[in-house]
Length: 80
Image (cartoon, rainbow, N blue to C red; front, side, top):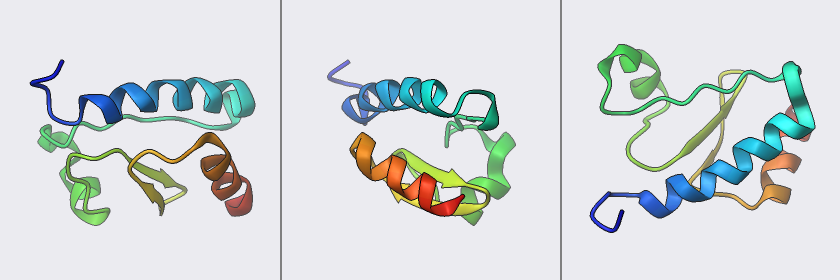
């Protein structure tokens, strides 16, 4: 995985995604977009998604990169 760009960020996102599912369950839909796939071109351009994980909720950019669980939860709860 050392040769894979952003491998550490993607591995760090996994536990956050599990916590999102555990806390919010069916009330939140999680989508993962690969910026190399042009099927999502409009969202990639709209949110300027590059290689780093980008967290978007209800069409609003919440975070770029990997936040701590508490930071992400506070942003989500504050947006609802």
